[in-house]
Image 1: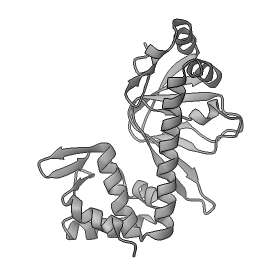
Image 2: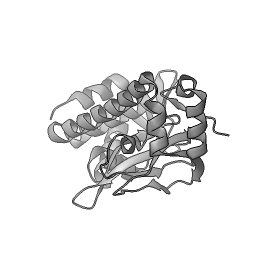
Image 3: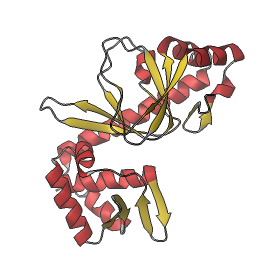
Length: 229
């Protein structure tokens, strides 16, 4: 039974007529991916759209230097690979499971037919795509105008906003990210991330507990993130 059919916590199945829901369910399959397994890779003619039911998925591309550049993370309930339903362009990104993840795979034509029957759902998907592009634009601006230390502070704050749990005056980032994974988000080498994290700990901006980052001084970390040199 498919249990998660929502975009940003909106139950969009309720917006669809019964025949559209049946068509979606008939065209869908569910798979489980272990950490490190590819959910999808670049394809000349992508055939499916994906919905994350449980877990965490990382989206990335390979750059010209052979390194990975992470665009962001998919959380449960989010649609990803959705551009396949709106264009005939090749898929250039990879999606890989960060945690054990359950993914719903839907034929792109069935997905497109279903959401186009309700303008409200088209708006939700379009808004989600827009938010992702804003994040990518912000990441590019950071690469151009900010130091590695500033970019790392900014990424930590973003992760805290997306995955943070408040514990007293501290903010625990609940997902585990390796130094290498942080490096693909920031656009620097793993050793650079390790050095900067050590400096943040020395300055009591963060601490690390069981491979998770705890933000100790959010205001001071924001000052580092906003620095332009």
